[in-house]
Amino acid sequence: MIAYKKCGNVTSGKHNSGRKRKLTDRDKRVLTRIVARKRNQSLSQITSEVNSHLCNPISARTVQRELHASNLYGRVGIRKPLVTARHALQRRQWCKHTDSGPHNSGNKSSGLDESTFTLFQTTGRVYVWRTPKEAFTPECIMPTVKHGGGSLMVWGGAISWRGLGSLVTLHGKVKAAHYVNILGDQVHPFVQTSFPGECPLYQDDNAPIHTAKIVQEWFAEYEGEVGHLD
Image (tube, rainbow, N blue to C red):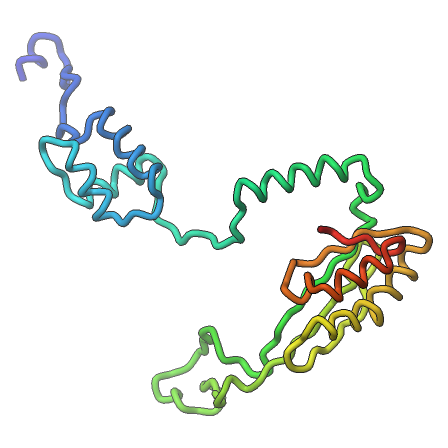
């Protein structure tokens, strides 16, 4: 009222109006470093460590709010194969070697992959539209069978820029000897047809049957026709 009578101002000129924040800028930096040091900590663990640096403890809700303000959110970690420092070094060395080598073109490579398909859906939620009285009508239920209902594994070892080969049905446990037969019956003819007069680079995923001695011997025998990614 006094400010209005003297100057005609209708707002406060104070810079510190409103509730004082519990964390200073320094405290926020400490909080960020705690999270960055160990990403898989729980909210309670983070709160406990932050409070060890503060004179006035704060709640987990305050910590969560400050993390969100810093664009940090709890999310499910993405799963991916481990890449060690040795792996990264080997990848860089391989890239430098192949950059000027005979296999530097992406259209001169071929790869493989195996996939398993369930013959009867056993996992995942299926939503249906129904009324409460229709819970057990045949159109609204998801039938189940014992032992998963079986599955089918297929192998595709001719995946390349220049085309696709045939799918091979795998029966039972696949061993190295079976894999050698697949290389001879599927991969070698595909390479001769799709890469005439060339030596494409064949890539696999280092499964135990892919690194067996008889498999390495097969690639050594056809070294001039099918290159093999180490």
